Amino acid sequence: MIPALNENNNIMRLIPRVMQVIAASNCRYEIIVVDGGSIDGTPETAQQLGAIVIHQTERGYGGALKEGFKAARGECILTLDADFSHDPHFIQALWERRDAADVIIASRYVESGSASMPFLRKLLSIILNTIFSKTLSLPLKDISSGFRLYKKRVLDALNLESRDFEILEEILIKCYAEGYRIFEVPFAYAQRDTGTSKARVIKFGYAIMKTFFRMWRLRNSIDCADYDERAYYSRIPLQRYWQHRRHDFITENALPSGLTLDIGCGSSVILQTIKNAVGLDIRLNKLRYMTRHHKPLIQGTLWSLPFKDRSFSCVICSQVIEHLEPGAAPCDEIARVLRSGGRLIIGTPDYGGIMWNIIEPLYGFFKRGGYKSEHITCYTRESLLAMLHDRGFVLDKECYILKAEMILVLRKED
Image (tube, rainbow, N blue to C red):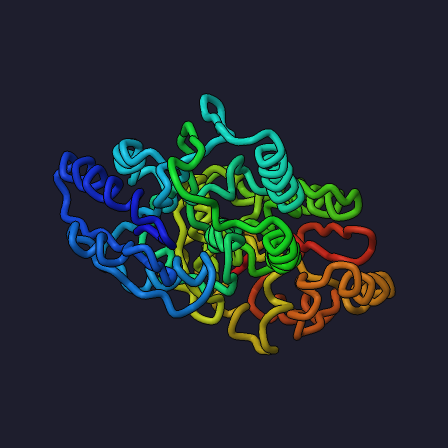
């Protein structure tokens, strides 16, 4: 897919080269040129050379990409610029790595990559990529490269809002938030061959700032696939302490033998630490993210666990039950899948003490997009123990984090 605006001289040379490279890959393909209103014969030349031409209706580079994504019929979509800054021969290198990730980037800023461009433009590009990568905790070096290979199913799942070049950052960040894999391949970027650049610095700067703040909210919300993992490695001392204390107590008390079920695992480091464990979560993006840790993962709900009776020696249910409507069914399900003599490790805020009732409003104020708004059932130590005792559980030990979050270790007795 090639967005183009008054690129006739480049298009007449680019399309034959693209065809030559793709033909060597022995795959079926189509070439789509999204024309932004050219007056130099670009669409006519593209059609004569065998490309499908889409006459862009939504303005901007972002509009071109969105219309091209919608029209594309292939399982993979490769995007490149029309100005020869993206060497068409590099298409082969991206195609060969198509199974390595859901998005493959021709990257200028990873090791062995390079960018031949004016000093000021390169400096601004490096600053932009560094700010996005560091501030939003993205393990990527080049998030503004437009030379990419996508799986179409990934793009179909995204709701893209940007209208101009900032769409490149939005796509990658939303892909990462959905748990998709992104891989960078070293690439040598060259200046455009002929014609003039369509980028406008001031307009782009304003748009990229708006996009940055939108993406910052997304990256720090519970909807992001790696939210739980990021909390464990948080730069905020209190959050990092809380997560480490929870992780250490739970993993120390999980049974070393037998199979463990981690309910509502998210992207938690707890599941990553325990060796013989299965993760269950209702959010598909978090499970998708966790596939990189090679754990057995299942999408499901605590209301109806997709396992046979007495399947597990240990069940972990940390920070889950407060998100569910009141009712005994979740505890009944836990008791059903846990073997006799098995261990339950369950954690939730203690609304019977003063500390959590002080901390929760502060957490909701300072951590917008966090879990506070999703706490719909308030447990006390006494109410939770009573409900679990009625289902054959006996308390073995307990832990409190800052006298606010309780973590109970119980034994199941028939």
